[in-house]
Image (tube, one colour):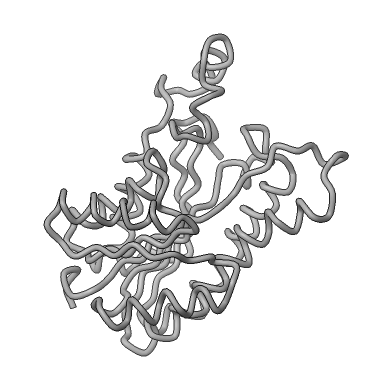
Amino acid sequence: MTAKEKTAVVTGAASKRGIGRATAHALAAAGWTVAVLDLDEAGAKAAADEVAAAHGIPAFGLACDVTDETSVATALDTLAADAPPIGALVNNAGITSPTPFLEVDAAEWDRIFAVNVRGAFTITRAVAPGMAERGFGRIVFLSSVSAERGGGVFGGVAYSAAKAGQLGFARALARELGPRGVTVNSVAPGLIDTDITGGVLEGERKAALLAGIPVGRTGRTSDVADLITYLCREESGYITGATYDVNGGSHIH
């Protein structure tokens, strides 16, 4: 199966300046049929239309709440009827929270884990059996440098804990699914210029942040998207259980 005969699913890819949207474009450029899944149905469809027009490939935009099994099943059923089999899943959907631990309540903690961990579980659990059955799959988790260095960027303890949970999830899943031709890897971006970070990257704060990045700039969404696309290649089948840092050298360990 070439990329042209497989679909790549990217969750949370409706945001115009997000990593998910850039990843959808990069995968489409590599020949994948692309499915954008997002809570924002109109945004997902707009992203799919944009990707299809730019790369001349089929693209699908579907409403999907990754925390809800019924919503995930409905989206995947729709996809199965119209698109090639799923060959790649990019678990990009996520939410952040800057709330300090001494102020966070149980509801917020659960909400952060619901999207970042339970959401990734729900859609991965729905997609992985088909990959294993077909003997090919690429699963990529969007973690964060916050999981590795213990917050201190934008996310608080809840976010760091959830993103660290994804790393353990991915590593254990890589062991289980490796014999079935499915690789599972994580990408841990540092400071990337998206809608989430854009508002705070100004003036003295930006200067201070850039001073700690050896390459001297913030990351671009394409920096992350290109790596994800590399990990989804058929030729990358000997890479699994790995965590790739994309942070310009701001966190070296």
